[in-house]
Image (cartoon, rainbow, N blue to C red):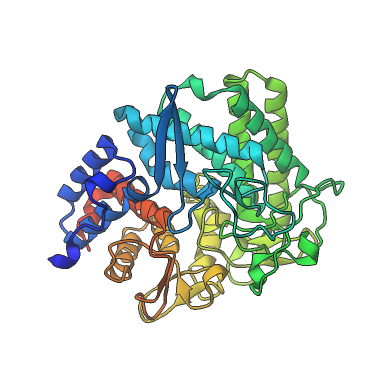
Length: 447
């Protein structure tokens, strides 16, 4: 069928080729009976490598740069997520291993350039379209939206890489400096003594593009939680304590403690990381969990420490539903279960139901758009076969014939979508298919 012709670039136009990834595609596609599902997987899983990676070697060292897709900039969060499904293949593919190692090196450089920035350019001479922001972005910075998860993503990639392969050569002096800067930034953004000088002002008609009160955000009670000016969607937070991102910070601080107890042999700094993780975790339990009228105790999405909270979710990572996917909450944890039931109900203002699909959306794309990423995360965090199958059917029926995932689509008309080239969503779909293939592959042939 013509519509099932590959959506991948010609081989000589692909940015990066991994033999292990190609072999995995061939293996999985051969198993799947459903031609359309197999086609979607073969298009989406390699999309990051095919279209977004810039890779070179200088003096024997790998240098990698991974753009998000149709925006020519590299997000710390997105780039980690985009390569994450390839980590299990590193032992089989030395070139792929080098590429990921080069990405870690690049992320470390970016953190040291500006720990508050979320997105960067390969060339520091490239001009940002947001040069009028206050404060003005540093050279090489795309924009300076402070998001907890940006720094967390860097630690996630480092620890994921070291769990996949034995490679102590990544533990450089620069990496050590970046990890300490990550800790310092998270600690500073508790703002216990108003020590943070971060603010973000942008002239815009979009309310979600900038923080309130001259870029400093709404008032908070200093309770040990970490402030985040923006969400993973790059939208401004309503209340500055973003609970899923605080829980992500707890997770990576514990990982940093293990890293410094072993590789860097600095027990004093490891103890500081553990102490901060414990403080934030306790604060989430005290100030981030509320008794819902219908669902019992659930996580709020954002809080201010005064008792104000918002019950919702945003179809990104980290999100409340993704806590299980990230290994932060176990599937049978009661608070997570309660929260998940709420998120997948009409009581969640951003659980959107239409003629074409139902699923989580985001304030980023309005009141009527569903995110494929939300549907994918629902499947990734499900233990119910029928729910997973239902999600796969929705993903099959809403790609609008493109063979790729999008940022979002209209609930009644999937042909009305945002971002035709969004590599994170594509790779996450590939990750979902691989997870099903590894854990319960027969589901792939029950559509």
